[in-house]
Image (tube, rainbow, N blue to C red; front, side):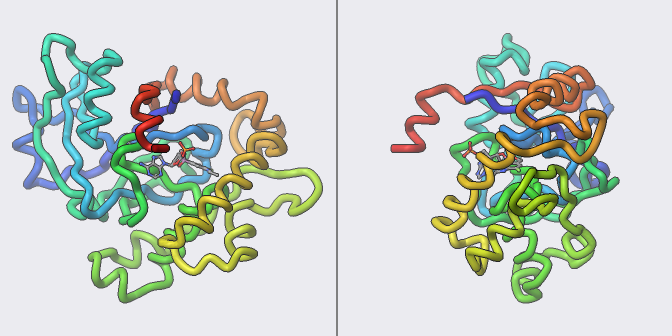
Length: 265
Ligand code: ZZB
């Protein structure tokens, strides 16, 4: 499975972490890296998600920057030449839980918001991608319902230390238009309301919604934003991916077939 890793730059690294992360007295850029199959939707990012109880390592990359991701994905990156090969294993500078990352301010590529924040998501799988998910509520049902959960549930916010200003101001940003039925409307909110999905813990319903939205986005979506505005997703998807990589905002990432198979059982 070939993913695109989107680099979400941490705008302010907490003081307490910076000593540990410095190299020769200098602190390089720190990125949460999110695996996606939908690089063309990055205009619609509103936040980033991590698993509160998940373990995330801070790994030194070959170019001196630091990637925050699961240990399993870091090992894949080592084999994919993103890290120094002389090391036998990824250089992990420190480990944090997802809960420790909640509230970090990020700079996300192509995103219309200048700053987005890290929020918890309870359904992330640590054995897929990097364990970091970038959120596009217009086209991803899981993201829509999870962001809505944080916006609407004060008791959850209190329990997980989520501030209102990290989720409340972030309206859905629509990215695609469609011909015919549901024209112009973002797909994910419409299908989630139709299926009456109550919270992002409703995994089965969300899996069904995701399947439907995926097909629709790829086969009948037309870009509403950016330089490829007006062009069909199916024609420009690889170009947007290439543009992001050329600008240093993303890197390719492969998940070996054995890991994909292990997931589906
Ligand atoms: C942005 C995005 C925009 C995504 C969209 C989807 C959609 P798949 O097909 O099952 O491989 N994702 C990535 N890693 C994880 C994880 N560890 N746990 C849970 N979800 C994860 O799914 C790949 C997609 O699942 C990725 O692409 C990511 O969300 C999420 F408009 O990134 B996506 C209809 C989906 N739309």
